[in-house]
Image (tube, one colour):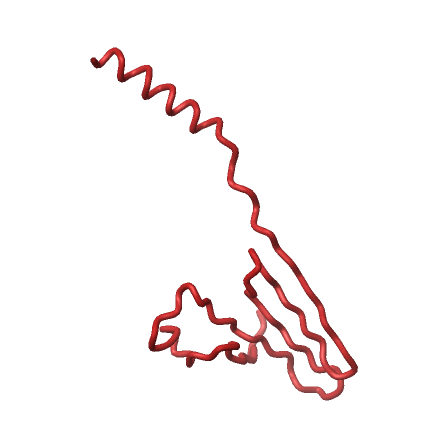
Amino acid sequence: MLRLAVPILLAALATSALADPPPEPKVERTVAEDDQVRIEELKVRGEAKKVTVKNKITKAPDYEIVVNDAGRESAGGTGTGIPKSGSGTRVWRVLKF
C-alpha cells in the first residue's frame, strides 16, 4: 500500500510544480480632464483603487478619493474611522515624503 502511495504523491507534486502561474491582474490608468480639473483613476481587475483630482484653475491642493472596497465593507462602516459612502471619501495629503 505504501509503495503505491509514494509514486502517486510524487506525481501529484510534479504536476502542481509544472502548472502555469496565475495571470497578472489587469491594470488600467485613465485620465479625464477639462478646463478646470484633471482626474486620474487607477483600476485593478476592473475595480477603482485610486482616484486623484487635480485643480487647474485655483491653487487648491490635489486630493485623493479613497474608494470603498465593497467586498470588505461591513454593514456599519469601513472600520477605519472613515464614514461609509457610496462614492468614497476625499482625503488631502498634508505632508509628502
